[in-house]
Length: 105
Image 1 (tube, rainbow, N blue to C red):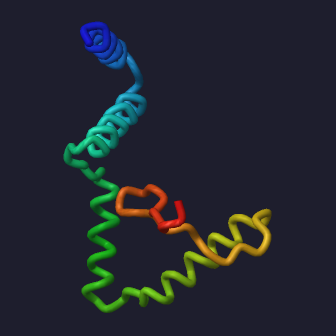
Image 2: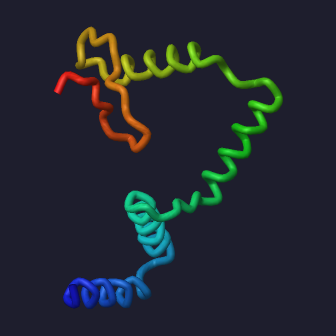
């Protein structure tokens, strides 16, 4: 454990010399890792702006139906994966982005 802490300390010291964009990426990755392990996720300014825009659309009644969203998603999956042949379903994910347990395993 001491070696791990020392390695992290050394990495952060080196990161102080990195370009600002690389430092921002390290911070973003750190937030993502922290959120995965029970921490609080901190949305970026861009993500917060997109969320605000989406909420505004919903308030103005500009949201599409769930059925339309599923159809758009299904069509985009099919067009993005032409080598998959004629697949007709998408494996559902649980709330954490992992494959959902469909009871077959």
